[in-house]
Each structure stands twice: as C-alpha cells, then as structure tokens.
Length: 227
Image 1 (cartoon, rainbow, N blue to C red):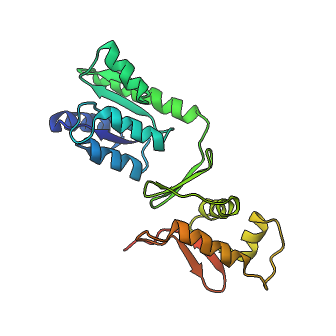
Image 2 (cartoon, one colour):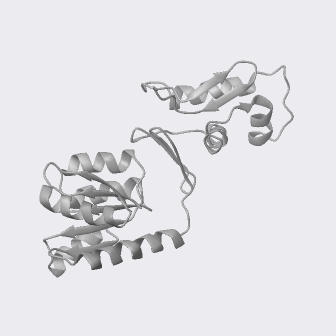
C-alpha cells in the first residue's frame, strides 16, 4: 500500500515508517498538519495515518479537509488522546478508525489491512486525476489545484471523455459522436468551440495547460513533465 503518515514526532514517525516498509508498504511522512493536508490532497494514497496533536493545523481539521475532498480515502487516527470523548471527536471529524498510543505494531498492521479490505469492497467513486485536475464522476464535481470548476452539461461530458482517455489523442469525430451522438461534419467548428470553453475554465489561470492540440488529428488531455 501507498501510505501517508502525518506525525510530528520524528522518532515515532521513523519507528512506524520502518515497520511499515518492512511489510512492503511505501510510506511518505509529513511532520505538520498543513503540509500533511496539502500532500494528502495533492497525491494519491491508499491510506492516511494521522496524529491529532500537530503543529500548524490540528489533526481533526486535517481529517475534515481530507474527507471533504477525498471521501473514499481511509484515515486512521493514531494519537495519545484516547478517552471516549477523544475517539468520538475523531470519528465525527471523518476518521475511519481510531487507535490510541501507546500501541502494539501488530495491531496497527491488522487495522491497516482491515481498512484496506473495507476500501476495496466499497463502491468505487470513479475519480480520475491528471496532474492537479480531479474529476469525481460519482458526485459530478471537478477540481483543479483544490478549486472547484463549474461546467455545463456538455463541457462536463467532453472533459469526461478526455480524462477517461488521458494521454490518448482523440479525433474530433470521436468526441462529437461520444458527447453529442452525431456524425461529425468537417465543416463545423463545434468541437473546437467547446474545447476553448473547457480551456478557459480548466487551463486558464493555471501554470500548466493540460488540454493539448494535435494538429491534423484532434485533442489530448495529458500532463507534460520535464525530463
């Protein structure tokens, strides 16, 4: 699993990371709440292990923000705050599990596996991502760099075609047939007009354009990385 650990005590973070990596997990560590929240929303993880008493942003608020954007991402709170009230607060903030410190590592592993199994058996949310663009086809929302983008029905449908075929060049005829259900007339600029609408919302104002023209062929949605 790809796990994000948000823990401000370096010795505790090192202990957990070493143990998880020994069981073939990949672990990213963030040492404060603000950084942890940013990393959780920016990148893809299978699970977040979250402390509560964090600098810059409290663990409860970190959990709320993660769950508001990524409802299906499991969050396990691992904290020294272990009263019944503490646990209730953790679950109310959106945590999927709550484990007080000190803890037995074998139990932590078991809880991680249980959360992973639960997530795998849950209905998929159909979330697609390219760079900092995220489309959630379950609740029909689109975000870029954490900002919600409002689209018309046809703009949304066109973006859905592009993002579900990311890195694949699509012809205008294919997009016209898929989105509008019509045979493409080479004399119309319908696709180009709607691509411009999308670019004005999805690309304008952001540092990296994601919708690219392939001259003589069509369009492609992809992230251009510097080699």
